[in-house]
Image (cartoon, rainbow, N blue to C red; front, side, top):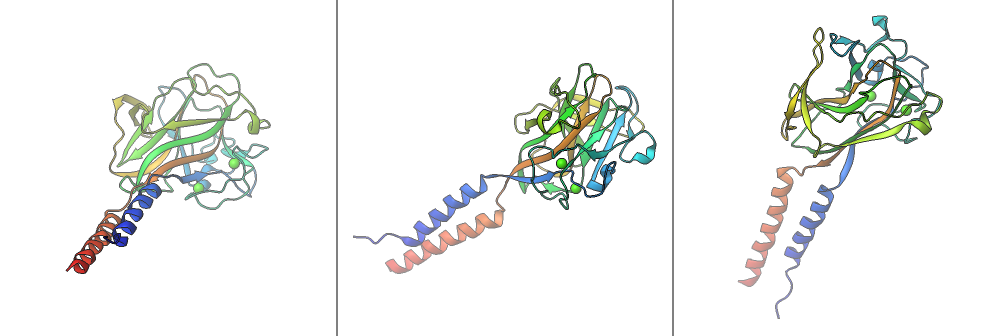
Length: 267
Ligand SMILES: [Ca+2]
Ligand SMILES: [Ca+2]
């Protein structure tokens, strides 16, 4: 009776466990917008930026800091933790008190809120989903839309869900009225977005999200029928790690050694 080839068995087990590990979704980025300072911290302090236009057809300007004179509260206290509560930042810098969210005021109808503090290559991760929590004050007419924006190799891509920003609330009830918006990035409909200071925002026809290249920035593209106070918290990006070719090569090598050992034993 032949003895079982334990080396090959171990190799097969290694491949199967490796595959199960590789298929797991993980949070590769999370910003909880925590700070220990006080009200009115510019989002630049979180590694985020904000481009906005006062009207849908108006020119894009930088609204990242209160210094431009029109922003009264960039990252301000929402009275309670944003939901989900008590999660730490992932690849987004230091987690501090999480009793803050990002708030922007009535002065824009179109906003691109984004971060470039974490970059990765699409050979490292397959994108799965993006999510965040938000509410807004009452008063904005349709369309009230929030979409994912991802910048790959210098080009912005946005999803184009419409009228998906319906949760009205206040800072005081943010923990109960803020709702989670989640986009499946693999199945979403994508468009290119032009976001150049001094020109209007421009969204193109349908395109596909590249599967290769460097993800340089990501965030939320918001369109409002009229400008209202909007609040955000706990932005997350979920992805699946793609095994490095060298890992496959090592496994193949291991299996090859097992075969060689088997041949040697059979001689
Ligand atoms: Ca950050
Ligand atoms: Ca928070």
